[in-house]
Image (tube, rainbow, N blue to C red; front, side, top):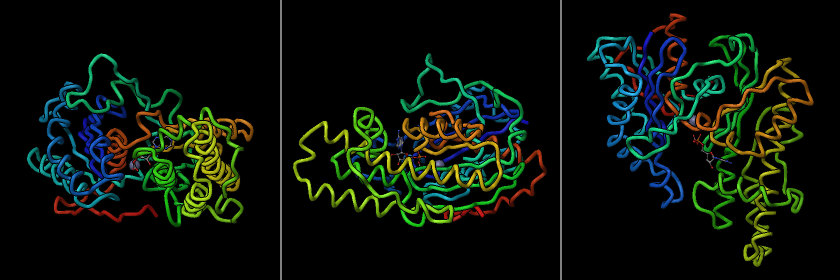
Length: 361
Ligand code: KG4
Ligand code: ZN
């Protein structure tokens, strides 16, 4: 089965061609630079950029895969959750392609697709830069460097990004249960907002990651919200507030690079400790033997290292999404859509609408 997938739920315009569980192409055009000026994603601008870039991105994905539209067996797109006007662009374009080709169309839940990204094996291509000058991810290579991932079910999946932080139990193929999520801010938002307080540009996560490398994670003691609560929920707004007050009460701190590095390392340590300890605790309780993680914050080196250490010492297999597949991409949408089509999941009517608030159950 050959499938074209489209993802436009937030600020990445992405198209991928997937065939029989393999990613033939995955073109991602990131709008990060555009939104940096505003300190966050501006929905109207995101939608206009998707509109401008979607066709070239889709054409690039097809040509890179060596596939012409008539060879497609199905089309898929993210249906939700996400920014309504951003989703609308990719979803309606994909429906139109399916309609024109008279092929099945599959609307996909973005979070459910994240559950699949840790299993996609990609080899970044160095030789050919993106036709649009954006980021390039996932190239002709196959899913699964080891065994079939159904061998690793049940597993526990941490999805951690700028908009979401959740723990999902993947019970079996296409069957999962959300164990917990954030009750206020996502971990990525905590990175971005605390970074903003330090004067770092949006999105601040990567800069904090970098500065934290040279800092002392024990320099300042920030709260670890909900760490000891007997649930799988997260909360990061209190941590954000405590960083705000800490900076207010130490006005000269930001004048000193060493102290900025210590601050970054200490904030990162607080976020990472909560994420890792709660993930390990849930994994033990649910009796899984494998943990996976995806979403933009999974790029964080401190989080990756700590998950690796904790999984090793607790005997869990760990599957982290490759860095270029942690952030939003159409490959994961295509992989999930293909598995749904193969499992004969009911096809949505072509008149289906986007679901910006579609939460995983
Ligand atoms: O998955 P993503 O691209 O978009 C959504 O939010 O859906 O995630 C973006 C988030 C931002 O908050 C960004 O700061 C964070 O991921 N992020 C990081 C790192 N790279 C990206 N946070 C910490 N360390 C990083 N290296
Ligand atoms: Zn995402």
